[in-house]
Image (cartoon, rainbow, N blue to C red; front, side, top):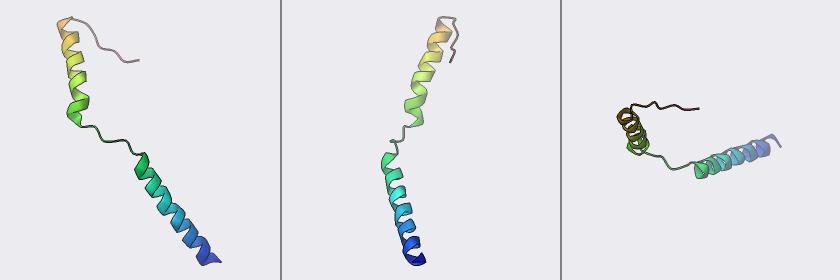
Length: 54
């Protein structure tokens, strides 16, 4: 009985790993993330303004 439980747990762990992999969002490169922020900062400098997050 114990072997069957271990095999079932092992199967569940493998299935959870597969499910977790499927749920991952695609990676976004640093350039894609940084460019809008850099543009925002440049605009704030040009307008002599501030950038604030809430």
